[in-house]
Amino acid sequence: MVKTQGENCCPQAGKRILTRHRTCRCFDLGLSSVQNDTHSLCLDLTVKSQSGPGHPWYEVQASVGKKPVFQYDSDSSKMKPLGLLGAKVNATNAWTELTQTLGEVGQELRMIVSDIKLENSVTSGPPTLHIQLSCQCEAERGTAASWHFNINGQPALLFDAMNMTWTVTSPGTRGVKEEWENKGLADYFRRISMGDCRHWLREFLEHWEKVPEPPVPPKKVPDADQSLPMPSIACIILGVIVISPVIIVICCSISRKLAQRSPKKPKEALYQEARLSSPALLSI
Image (cartoon, rainbow, N blue to C red; front, top):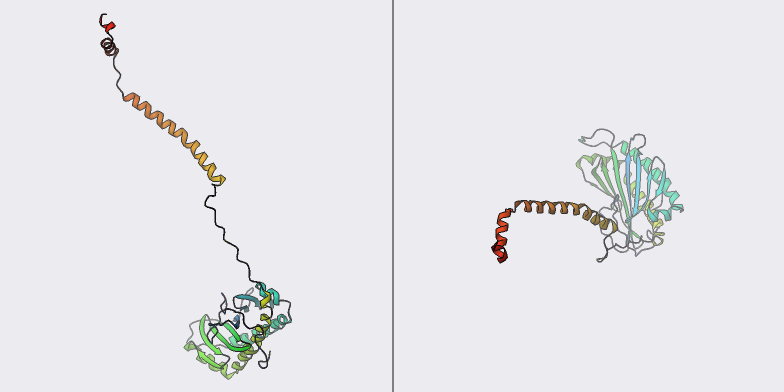
């Protein structure tokens, strides 16, 4: 474990690091309202007393602001780097130390979750403990550290490591809080969040400026005078070829019907009209 005294938390103050990540959020104690010179590390831990094959009983995912750093599980007992920041710190001494510490913390939490007894619980089977650990520093000083405990998916307890205070967020977990206080777990949680967590944050921040922001690709806007693509032209030509014979057939049919409807004059009537129009024929 890392000692909590005599250490500066953030060697590179002055860069803005947000405290929210899609899988790990920083809660209360000033962790949600971050100033420009504030840095936060969030660890999302899931601990089960029992698990089946292929399902790790212990999983961790960490992020510094919006940048994921690593994930860890009990099956491999190894940390997998995530993102550019994780790739930068992968080869450091802190990476090896952190892997060992996470394994020890997981074993301790597994014993804790095995002893959890909820009051008036309707959930059967071994409980699952979900923890969100957050530590924050500002201007080279630790300003906040907290543990949020969820049991079986329900909010249970909040521990403020700075002030060593507990908040019961579910009435059924008062007994859990008293048991943890009697076991002296407050000191253990404070040592992890005020010592180890800040030490990890400090190590990660040394590589923060070396991680470039990924470029945003420009959006392609189609030109207004862009000509039709070849498939569209081919479709138009094919449509004209198919429709033209149909139009010709329809026109011929209409002409034939009109011709059939017009009355034909007899030959005598035609001859009489010709005599009246020609004086030469009248003498015949």
